[in-house]
Image (cartoon, rainbow, N blue to C red; front, side):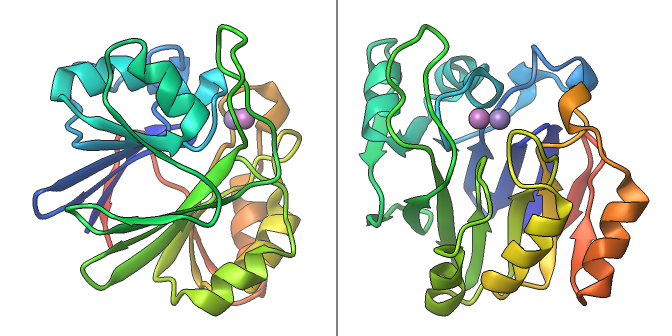
Length: 225
Ligand code: NI
Ligand code: MN
């Protein structure tokens, strides 16, 4: 399974014929200027919540690829009005897609779309693809509900926000990794703007102390897991 980092909280997950994109925010992100949005392949775009820094490039990537947006009902309806096809979900619901199974789970955050439309409740995803299971937390605080994810799923890796201020910071993310019972964490939602700059070494040490591996990817980098 190949993971490509597009900056901020955006990743591509590629496995066989499956191309997933999470929360694309690329063209407005100066730090991601090396990423060519028109080259991004996607058959499904998973959107955690409606904030601009998670949806900016959804419409473009969806239309370039004829991809399906997977998100909460309100966000999917908003994109459908723009001519993008979607699959609506809500908390606790799972669906078997052609590539695998997706469960939409809670996030402790907020959600409004860029034009002020109601963005439903913010969420995250547990994704199972041919024996791999991972959790994409979206923007969230640490919550005790994360323990349920650890109890119900055997996670191979997880994407957790670590930038603090708008989401949990490093210390709470270490606790979250413990709650979800996952030793392999890919950090997201840090360094993009002033409020969420982090010290990379400090972050890695904090996770290492708890026996957890934190990966901080370079923008444009692809890793194989
Ligand atoms: Ni947000
Ligand atoms: Mn955000």
